[in-house]
Length: 305
Image (cartoon, rainbow, N blue to C red):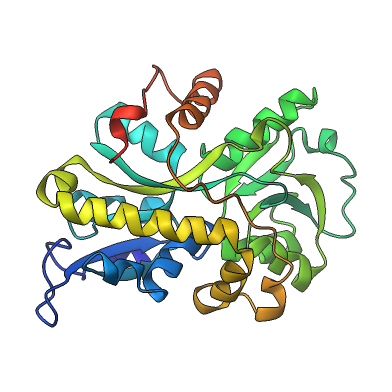
């Protein structure tokens, strides 16, 4: 349903709003902590300050929005995991541009959860077990493999399950563990009593760029001022999120299925104020090591400045 809804937003999401003259942009976003700067920029008037009218279209997977992005029905995909989009860029199916960084991985911003009565007691027990991830071969499996490799542990078998369905999948025994991202991480623990088997933000995963705000080269070419204004607004909101985590915790219940009480205990990611090519190269190197890219990609020319 979310993917279908994206088709209805119109044929040119970079068009102009007739009401007030602001340029209207449609942005697809997941209800994750990754998207906090997007909502802060909207609700704090930072987009309006740049002459933009940003409409947010929720999706359950960022990849759902890729066809709409390619057709110009969506201007930007927020909380887009870099792994998927670097792969699309390498294959030539997406002329990728990165407007701004989303988040970098911090401790417990995602965890490997198991049922409270699970026989799995340590990360080494994950070898050969079924672990839920939102998208196969993306940032979750990439970082979990790297963490397990660093510990000398065997790897699991991944199953694709959307974040909202991971809690029920654990309870029904459809998977042995779930790699869950905030705010779903805290919600699953609170609702089912699931326990943390492994901090997904530890070891080689810590500080790694996880997601960003991506668009196409065509959009940047046609709407350079909108692209630059969007970047400035998101980076200003990211600065706010980094300096005042309370602002993020207040914003979360407004767009994610999390209560105000749960928001106070959620583990937040790191919100970088500006994109760093060196940090993104670290991600590219890990993808190359894991066989998720066949050649090196220099992220610097892909960043919109």
